[in-house]
Length: 159
Image 1 (cartoon, rainbow, N blue to C red):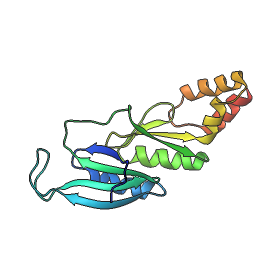
Image 2 (cartoon, helix red, strand yellow):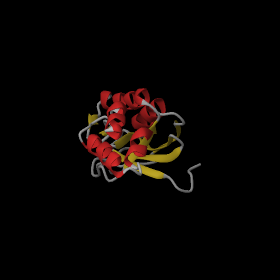
Image 3 (cartoon, rainbow, N blue to C red):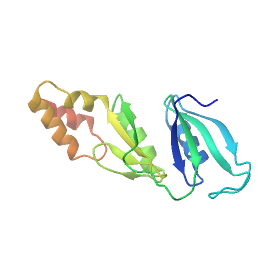
């Protein structure tokens, strides 16, 4: 059964592929019910996958195969707080390495165009540092990065 509040993500016929990738990549993620279209619709035929219920790190989502008219953009992203460089590298590399693309400041896109912020907790703490000079150094270092380098952020905080 669909949660009372669910994030609906639009795909062009690839909702099940995306949901399966997310379930295999992120902890506390799974693919749920798959609804096949009871009749033809503008983006598909009777029997095609219409919607897929899934969770991404405990967040309920619904993948809708709505067609090619609407594309994902950076106005929506999943932000994933990572605990160390190994986790940061693993998630970044699996997203980018499976047809995705790198962006800046810890952002990347998966092959379906959905944006992900792979954000080490160290970075969040560094830019919230009460020492404004240290926070600015960390922020400036982040602004030069694609994937976040935790050692470089820690070095920037130290000055």
